[in-house]
Length: 286
Image (cartoon, rainbow, N blue to C red):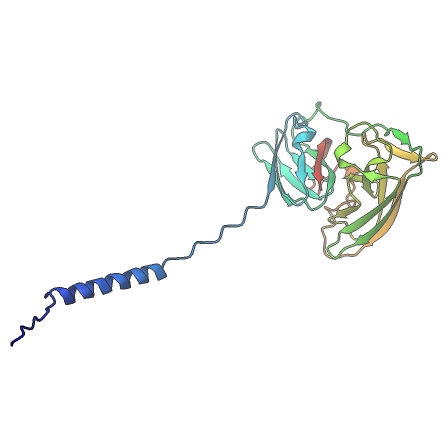
């Protein structure tokens, strides 16, 4: 008996189809491997406070609420004016020349908390008669503390020509949230002075003066109520002083805290200052 053997044959196109499938799988694998990994998110920008300070007729319409920053922020203060002069930010020892059509700008990191005076030194130019402002305040009010209260300070120079001031109090706490409010017993802020010149308010136990001219300086700190009256106890003002000898590390002698006499009405570039106007305080909160 003969068996018929059936032979199975693959279609003629089978080898080509196999090669095509292999190529597709290889391309898919390569494409998956070559896909770039997602980029890591970019770091967020450093927070900044931008303040535009216009000066018209030697005054500004900005209020205390407009002149605020948070410690650690970058502050950009842009000043415009209708007459030539110089803006001085006390405490941070920063200055900028300004003139009509030529704004001045102060950009800095708010490393120190406190209230720092912003003054406008008006340069002599044309007829400057009238419109002046006497920024000399009357004698400060005083408030007698009924409970014992005291303050002590230490002042140490740093390697950059500045001074670190440490403030220790008893019977008193710093209360930046109550500033400009009615007196609260045992609470308030401090005022700091260098060689008799007020630098600003202090809202914490540490204060850094960025730069002082080389030599001996007197640092004074007084305790004040929320409404800025000076605190007294047993008939004496609650204050403390410390002397510090600042070494010469190459700091600019003509533009440093306490090292420049503003009473001679002259400027480093020999332009006469005909008026000095207090515009307010930049308040830096912890």
